Amino acid sequence: MSAEVEEMLKRFQTYKNIAGIIIVDNDGIPIKTTLENTQTVHYAALMQSLVVKARQVVLDLDATNEFTLLRMRTLTHEVILAPSDDFYCIVIQKPSD
Amino acid sequence: MSAEVEEMLKRFQTYKNIAGIIIVDNDGIPIKTTLENTQTVHYAALMQSLVVKARQVVLDLDATNEFTLLRMRTLTHEVILAPSDDFYCIVIQKPSD
Image 1 (tube, rainbow over the protein chains, first blue to last red):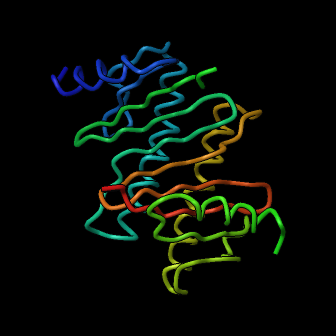
Image 2: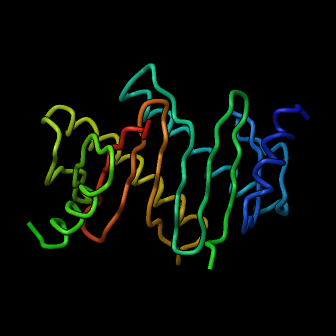
C-alpha cells in the first residue's frame, strides 16, 4: 500500500464525525476501506461514476483544469471525494450536531 | 421570476469572489445569469449532467435522501451547485487569495 494512500487515510481519519473512508483506484476498485464489504462496493461504484462525470465536466470547460475536491452534502451526510493521481478517497461524514 | 429565485440570487451575490451566477431550471434551461450567453449555455449544459448524476447517486444509496449542496473545487475556481425544487443555482467562485 503506497505511502501516499496511508498518508491520505491518516489525514482524513483526523476529521470529526467520520462515518467511513474508502480509497478507490482509478478503475473504481476499492483498495482500502473502513466500511464493510457490501457498502464499500456500493459506494465505490456510485462515487466512481460521479468522479468520472466531475472530471469530464471540468475538462470540458477548460482542458487545462482539474477538479481537486468535491463535497456533496445530503440530508443525512456529507461525502467528500478527494482525487489523487492513481486513486481517490471517499470520506463519508456525519453532519456535526 | 419567482421570489424564491430572486432570493437565492441575492443570497449568493453576497458571497465573496463571485465570478458568475446562473439559475437553471430542472430541464437545464438557464433562467437567470450574470455571465454572457455562450458561457451561460455551456456551464448550464455541463452542470446539468453533474446535477443529474449527483441526484441519481444519492437516490441509489438511499431513496429517502436528497443532495442539498455540491461544491466542486478545481485548480482555478470553486463551483457550487445549490438545488431547489424547480431549479438549481450555479455559483462560480474565484479562490480567495
